[in-house]
Image (cartoon, rainbow, N blue to C red; front, side, top):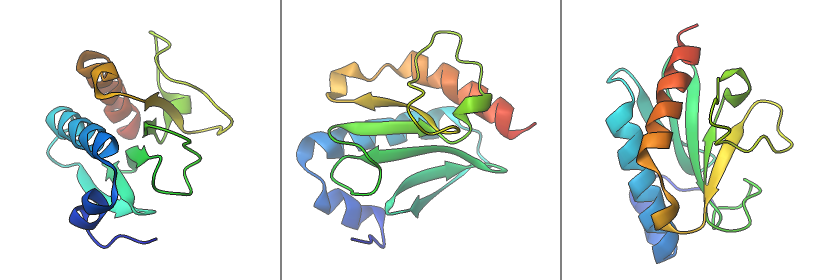
Length: 124
């Protein structure tokens, strides 16, 4: 499955994933600098500055290894200072992530802190 637009992605997602993807995208947009861009990569929202910053991968979109919920992954998580140990390291050596099963688990303050750190790493 390859989506050509966010609208196609949203139409495909089950309601709970659609809500979480939308909330996460709003948080990312709110806390990333204006020069950062969003595109669909592997049919999911991907945000970049100079390089990749983060990705939002719903479980319904195959290929991300997400079994349920929605993953917020930081492309260079291995270089980030995650002082609160918020992110899961997993098996990928670079991408560190958090998986949300319900919308009420989304913590904007924690994500904002990580996005600030991700932008710092992007500017190194």
